Structure formats: structure tokens, C-alpha cells
Image (cartoon, rainbow, N blue to C red; front, side, top):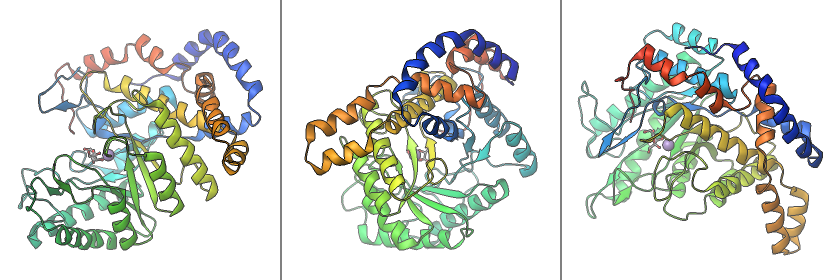
Length: 424
Ligand code: PSV
Ligand code: MN
């Protein structure tokens, strides 16, 4: 399904009067309004191919129908999102779930929707039917060299697929670890993983980045071999300048100060990318900003502060991606909500009076510092983000238009009600 441009324009026209009224009072308050607007127009958040179908848990899965059955249909779905919000201009593939059969055809299709290929993701956390060795006891950390070799080879193949598609980064997330004390020699597991990662790193094209993603627990419940940002940073530092740490918001122990982690990784020039989601308990895969919007804002505060300090480009110098997929919502509506929440947090953080905040910090004026942050956080920036969408050719309210065009019903008509997307 395609959303024609005129349908978006028609919808925007009837919603415009209300929008302009809301925007006007806000514009007066923002000194660098045009600059903020341009940053919002430019900002893009990649969509993971595995979030386009209903996620499940080990207790069940409740598909909502019309899920993409192929890589082509996944690209089509991200194309729909991007047409509506103009901020989802890239798709991130997970191999082997998304092995392209015809690179040129896939690239042409993505280009028709204005999409590029974000980070490529490898998968050594599941066994595939045609695989020689099992990853039951890990992949890159495995005690047997043959298993490690298979994992390395898989990652190299993932890079090769990515090169064909024009991707520029590889994300390695390993589920390696142990479930019981005594199961693993931590030092040997680290060394073996490092050696395996070094072999993958050696195969990286010179203009590629490698992201080492960490996760505190699950599927291993006693130790994880890349379990936190310290361990990821150790690997990234030992690997070299093309290796970076990737922060997934759901991969921390409860109450971790993620904004501080982000700040220090940026200071070290080792923050590579981001996986957005939200959670109440662990890796809950909930919609970004649905549980802790203030934390998301504080993270963006540090991101902007740290990126500006290093003169980094907000849009292109880090990999921005959503990584969430759960059981109850229409996945496309959920992704529209996640992108909106991320844009709102980014917009609020752009409004922070940074000079005043720095002065308050130097004067130990704790109350003032909090006032400054909360003044930005409590600003209703929804009209700003809507205006950025309007300028980029998207819809003032993407979910409203998605529903009025009956997109899900159309997809069910085209694809059927029992389709199951590949992924988790
Ligand atoms: C692991 O929980 C993770 O966050 C990694 O990014 C994976 O590649 C992704 O989820 C999809 O399973
Ligand atoms: Mn992730």
C-alpha cells in the first residue's frame, strides 16, 4: 500500500487552522526557532525490521493481521511510516531473518520510499535449521573454536550483505553468558569473545562502524559476557577506532543512570548508537516515552550537551534506532508513537537554556538548574514537532491519518489476517 501525497496534503489543510493557533504562542518563546525547526526536520530514527510484526512472549503471541511476509513488505511498511512522519527514513535489517535475494531490487524499492539501510544486525543467539554448530552455550565466547568460527563467519556475511545494500554499520549483540555460577570462566569467556570480535572487526570496510551492544540479563540469567557499558567499552577500546558502544535503553539494571552513561561515553568518543524503547521492569520492549518520558528527556539533554561539545552532527553522527516490539498494539501505530515520543524529547532538550544551566551549575544553584531543565520538559512541544513534519511533507497527526485511511485494514486485505512477520 502507498499513501499518495495529495491525501496527506488534503488532511493537513483541514487540520491546519488549529495547528497554526497552537504553534503561534510557542514560536514567540523560542529565540532560535528556525534552527530548532531545521534540526527537527533533519532528525531521523531508523525502524528495525523485526518491530513491524506483533512481538510475543514465551506465553503467547497475538498477531493483529496484515503483518509483512517478506523483506519487500517490511520495506513497504517502513515506507508508510516515513510517508506519515518523514522521520523514519531508514530500516535496520536482522540477518538471517531478512536475507535479501536481489540486492539491486531491494535497493531500488527502498529508494522509492526514500529509505536507506541503517545498521545491519547479526544473530548468533538462535540456532538456524541449516547450522552446523549450536549456540546453546554461547557463540563468540564458546569453548570450542569451531563454534566461535561459525559465529565470526556469520558476522562477516552480515557485513557483506550490508555492503551490497549501502549500510555503514554492524551491530553485534551477543546473548553469550551463563545461567549458573561456576558454568563459565569469566576471563576466558571475555578473551574468546574479544578474539572473535577482533576477527569480525578486521573484516569491517574502512568507512564502517561496529557497535557492541550490551545487555544486563536475558536469555542468560547469571552472567552476560557483554553485560554493561563498562564491558562494552572495554571491548570497543581494545578493538579500535571503528568500534563503539551501543546503548539500548532496556538493557540496564533497574534505576541505572542512563543519562550519565551517555554523557561519559560521548566524552570518550565511544558512543556509537542508540536503541530506544521503554520499560518498567527490564527489557520490556514498550513504546519509547510511555513509562519514563522525563528520563528520555534527560538522556536527550546529555546527548545534545555531549554532541555539541564535540561538534557532532545530531542527525548523522550517532546511529538512532527504535528497538521494541510487544504484544498488544498495532505495530505501525506503536512505531509512530515511539518516533513521536523521541522527537518530543529531542525538541524539549533543544529548548533548554544551556548558558543559564551551565551558570547555575558553576554557582551550585541547584534549584535554578532544576527549574531550567523542568521549564523545557514542561513545555508542550507537540506543535513544534507537528510543524517539522508539515515542512518535511508528513502529516500533522500521523496516527489520526493512519486510522482515517484505514491502513491496517488495507494491509489485512492485501496480506491476510494470519500472516506472521519474521523476527522475535
Ligand atoms: C536484544 O535484546 C536486542 O536488543 C538486540 O538489539 C537484538 O539484536 C534485538 O534485541 C532484536 O532481537
Ligand atoms: Mn537492542
